[in-house]
Image (cartoon, rainbow, N blue to C red; front, side, top):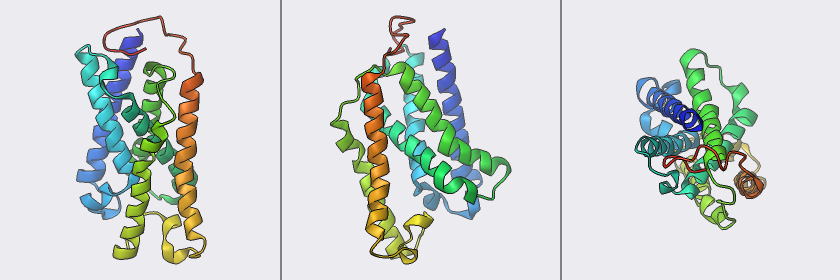
Length: 215
């Protein structure tokens, strides 16, 4: 029963991911932005990351291969980036979008639904104490370089993706603190993930074992 539930969850996640990414990148780029520009958003990159993880997990499960074949640290990274995307969307952006119909649905899928799906999957199938503290260093590499990308893109090309990171609209002396705060959010989220994984006891540990599911 557990395996079927996970299978259904992964199928839904893949369908949602393919639909939302295809719609936003190809069929109807939001606000008329180009494919390349859309791809530069952190939410798009984290959604792509999560989509790849779910596709690999689904293929493995259908072939009855263990989930551990997909490096748990990559699954943890995808979850971290998805969770931060969700938090940032809910805190800073949700009320700023004047969108309806499919565009709003797509944004909610990209920013919230996919992260929640991966969170549920990881809680059920990732073994406790899998995430080690040294993973924080590796998980922080991508956010660090993405922040550098945002700074360079904004100063060189004038592309202001995030209103709270627009250099011209922020006191220059305060700008480094904004960047530090962004990085700190990733760090705290990563610490909480590792801590929860270290103390979590899976009540289904001895149940429903199968070659395709890692308990």
